[in-house]
Length: 248
Ligand code: PGA
Image (tube, rainbow, N blue to C red; front, top):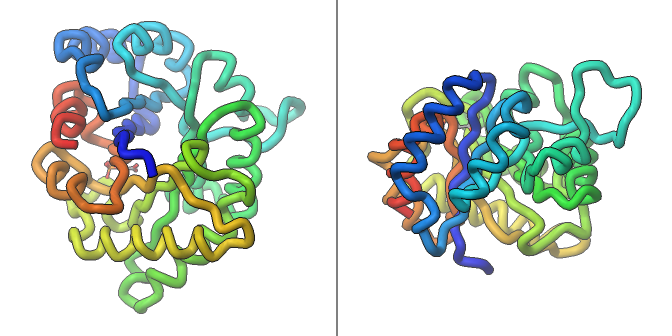
């Protein structure tokens, strides 16, 4: 297992060109390139990828998409293919984020197809899984996450080419991260679920996401099985994002 940590920022539907410029200026001052043992990744809205790819690359920071269509091209109004993300400089793409699962009805089968499309175009998919509060309270968190891993992760993708993110839905954007015990337990469950698939896939990294911030990052990132973080709100501020990277 690779010990290079991945600290990924998910900007969601935030960021204009002036905001991206201000972010890049602040980031430049924080010298992100001087962070051995960590890969930094920003996933801005698709409108900013082309524009931010080069300046980020100069700072040693990777760029990725937040979603892709499973197909190659065609009559899919409003969609973006994995090949297009690659074309503008992306190395990664987030698939199956809970906001897409909940608000756009994305199923495990669709997430599986998106992850395959990502690989076909040389992108590393970051496949998100995580239970809702109702599922957790009903005692079903483990079963739900196991099933998401089984059905969303394509066979034949492993090692560095596969990143999972455990993001309990109730921890996203709420300021309330999962407990360290819960994070450890669920990372263990995900590893087991991957090993139990027909190809016994090993995944390079399992990230934790859900209210990661500078104040809790060190404890979360020190956990044995945690290979990095998927950061929403706190990634919009270059200072907070780098503080999280420095905690790794
Ligand atoms: P948050 O979002 O850090 O704002 O909780 C995480 C995510 O949705 O990936």
